[in-house]
Length: 257
Image (cartoon, rainbow, N blue to C red):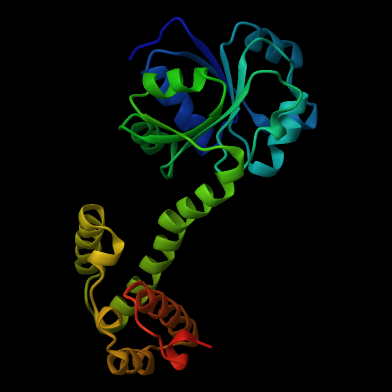
């Protein structure tokens, strides 16, 4: 949905800010960007900032979570919607502005180009606050899900597990694959198939492997073979969680208790 009559100012020129700037411009918004740090530090040309914001429908604050409040407080007020793109922050950090909201993409944005492409690829956005944000998501071709302030920390914890914890698991696979001389790419194919199974059947029904069948002897053999205490600790925690998911009583030496 093209929306060329609307204007947006993105405050923040890091990965997220530049990804939103590119994506919104591709969707037909008139977009300008401002670095966030000078605004928070009081060194920005605030007359220029005020002029840009005066004609904006939307001001996106794409700053680190700890800096959102200081950036918001430094920005001039206007009739625009002021929205942050944090997954965990509530709307109080956007004071003193009247129309506020949050717009968090359930997607990793590793760089501006890749991030913009992903924001435009039927992305799911967690939103809260002003109704304009539904229009923003629609203009990007995405899906909006209302996540209120009381649930944002839980929502963001799930997102962290899905992205960051999965990456940590991949790092363990890389280490072990290198140790045995098997290309890591072979394991990525297996992981992709597993995610497909979860998407189709749900996590409990997709679970396979020794923990799913309470094969604790095999798990103990794996633990003995792993090369480091860090690997064993990580593996033990995941096996215990998988065993509980399968409905088994997990032995104390596997559970780590």
